Image 1 (spheres, one colour):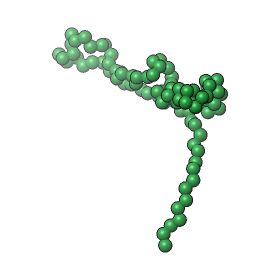
Image 2 (cartoon, one colour):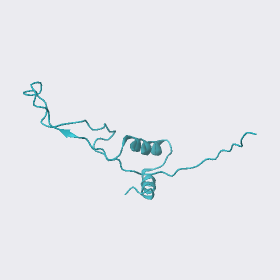
Image 3 (cartoon, helix red, strand yellow):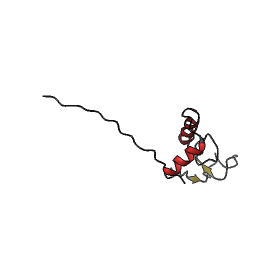
Image 4 (cartoon, helix red, strand yellow):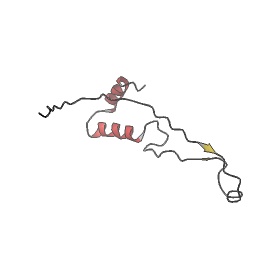
Length: 89
């Protein structure tokens, strides 16, 4: 007999989440390959490159605000009000 298909559009409101990145720190080994080398005393993986270094905003968040400003013509003061409503304090 078949089935009956229907579609509906759902809007998922914006969410603000905090991502925590933990980079392990390790000391270099004491083998002959590293001894006397110009290696730093503590090794860690490099941090993710950001559009604005030192910023709390992830690149996708920064891109979202830039697109909202210039493509959607939403001024930053209104974006600030919206972000407060989303729970970004």
